[in-house]
Amino acid sequence: MNKGERLKHRLRVFDFDEPLNNHFLCVRELWIRGDLYRRRPDIVGFVNGLPLLFMEFKNIGKDIRSGSLTS
Image (cartoon, rainbow, N blue to C red; front, top):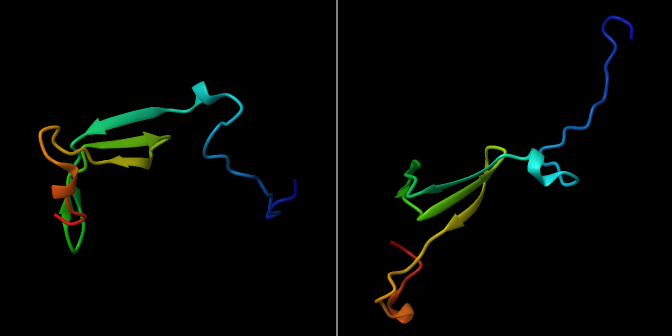
């Protein structure tokens, strides 16, 4: 390689060939703050530090029809 020469490399965020090489983390009730709102999803799932899963659960005693899309 010459000085100043550019090299191309492919970044692989996930290891699909060896899933155990990835780092998995689930967090309960993580506060998320934005300019417009604050949210606290029940579970946020991370893979290699990237949030890929957001889960919101309803109370088992409530009728699902009483739920809404906004808080």
